[in-house]
Image (cartoon, rainbow, N blue to C red; front, side):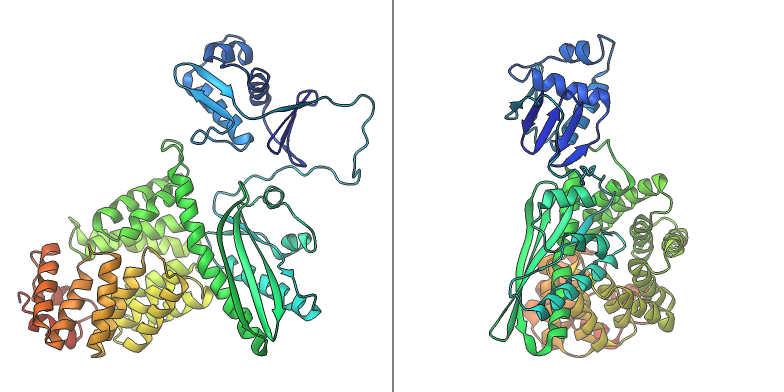
Length: 521
């Protein structure tokens, strides 16, 4: 007997579960569990029913039964939160609630429609975000646009491959689908990826229009879509623009989706990857309590995988900030631990843009090593020009080196690459300070206000705002900014802050502005 539901075929004679043309691997016990639930789908089956049928009456813990049910759900694309196909009825039992059609296998030998093709087994998803970029469809019929479309897909694939936290399918595998009508879910299963990017290219009246969409291949949901248009006069510039726009749009979307997926999982079923994804929102808050929680989760991840570079970077950042902000009991030990973790990340991958850019900022801020710091942040953005975090760290590095114009350029690039980034307040804050030391006080006020709007809890944007407003003589607004700063840092003193400011003394325009604002000296 074959039971058909959604895109699945459950064959009791062959003891085989198929999803489309692919065979889904399940253990005999899980197969028996699905078989019993599907056969008895007209009623609620109790826990005792399942134990008697599957375990022959042996004593089985609730945890063991729950685990098997979750595996069965996962095999058919269901989960404990949705319970779309297998429903748990508290204190009553379980029931298969999907719509099922029964089909008997024809007698005699079977003839396959395509004997040269055997069903491909579904590949397991990697333990990090995975994506395939499919060939873009040429809608114009122009052979030249075919080359353009293929080149753009190559560029997007290469750009995504620079993100160390992404698993990207190689071009040759993705291009095996060129010219074919594809089922995105099937592509996801065959390539073993959660996300698929597809698009099209159309030429008309001297212009090219490119459309793209990002799809969750596990359920067909559309996560992002956009279109871009440009002149054919500079085809390579257009190709670069589209590549940057697509990558900068989908990377934050992938990260948000992954965090949402992790947050829906059971908290006692964690891997190192899950722990780092759970840490990320806490890290993005940039509050000391948030960073502390992120560090706790990342240290737990490092116990599972001692060579998890991103976990080392996030935890290292916390220890350094904790020492700088005088929250640590032993600042020297805290700083040493932070540096150890950043160096660990670089020993794992010397080309990790996140680690390089952060180490560059630390080298300038803590040790005043301008040459080494600038070299590291420049190398970081060269390795991955699409990583907003590296451009943000580069901006801070150049700001501390009192090179305001270059700092502003870096912050603007970070904002352009990730305009809805949860850390965007960092770039607005740095930009405000860079405008301040350049004497561009109106622009400093505007940037500081944007930073405060994005994250009103941090004190640095209020310092920038108070100093810039004081230079402009806007006394009423200065008093408000000072009050809000002191509400967050009641014990703030200009002399203590300046003494702890690295490297050396802060820029004189900054200090003068704080004095004019009437902050305690």
